[in-house]
Image (cartoon, rainbow, N blue to C red; front, side, top):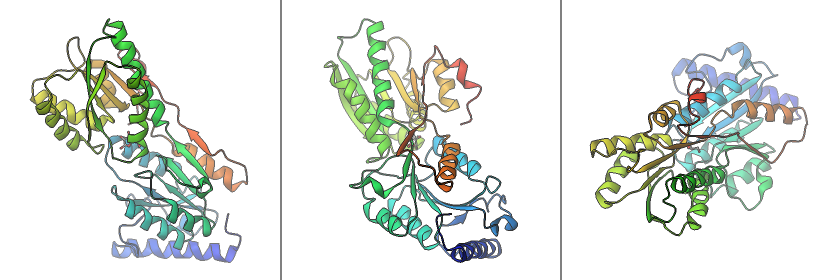
Length: 350
Ligand code: AHR
């Protein structure tokens, strides 16, 4: 435990226990928008809650915008279960950084052992992380990265290399046009972006942009925020179709936006993926998207791996044991095309 005073630790557990009883009896906790982990599913037993051996973790998830996000939340909940020795306090920030600040401050006041944050955007974290540091609570960043002046504000980052994902998509496109003998053709590209200012959006845009910069014939004609949701993806694609007649490549920065874009394209009678049709690029590698890769509707899907819960549990256990941990851990990620997708569809868990 990182709190040396064991009397203090017991008090936290009792506070947590009272919180659960309050939630169970009244349906509402003392903290607005809070749910004690897994109370909704009834997974936490009160006996476990009073077990001082549990490591308490406050988890600020940024929202529930996508299939990927749900898989990430499930991965963390499964790994940080009471059976595995954790007491998880979960908060869904619904895309609002302010709500993430509020959650972190509440975790600090509850004196949890660890704080885990999936940050909705990169900027703006210095003050609240300084508060966690002052309270002596290690912060682990999950999935998305942040931009801070002093990186001692957090202990470790576990997530995806968004820049590499964007670059992989760009390299695939270069090769695709080379194979078609179109390396010198004028190519019009539209991008449906994820949440503005998020490391997922900025990293993918920069990675893809680096490859685009060396292909002078690639025209980035529009880049529009689709907020990582299917509904926005559809709305944005419909608008792009009405604004641009000649689109060669559609880059959707996640699968949910690609699903929405495909709906809009279908409604407009536009097919993708085949010869003479716009190329469709997506990110995440959800099962549904891999099926569309197999059908040839999506040309390439760059994986973004949401199954980081186990690694998170391992890092926390290492810290508990006093072991040194790395500053950053990157999830393993693949690139899916028609050629290799059959190998992976069956085992997809998201
Ligand atoms: O940060 C990961 C991204 O956020 C995933 O690509 C997307 O689906 C999610 O909402």
